Image 1 (cartoon, rainbow, N blue to C red):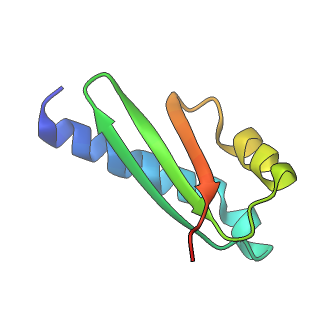
Image 2 (image 1 turned 135 degrees about the vertical axis):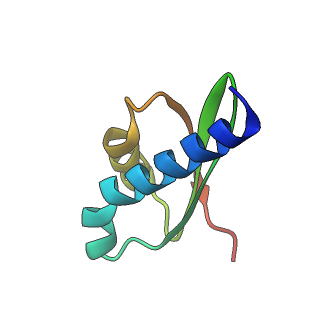
Image 3 (image 1 turned 30 degrees about the vertical axis):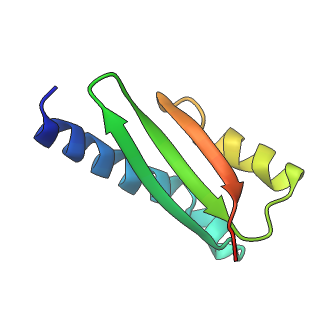
Length: 77
């Protein structure tokens, strides 16, 4: 995969992830999301305000199965 294709894939994964998170966002979830990737795979990074163990499990259930490694952590203030 060349660099342009990796960038397009990362952007597509970001948009799809934002759509998957729309219900939680409507419930008040505040986060920062970005995707990094290489020809061998993508990583979804999510920094979440007020991250709890239960919320993290819910986020994993929503975002898993998309072929990306998940990096979910509390947002530093």
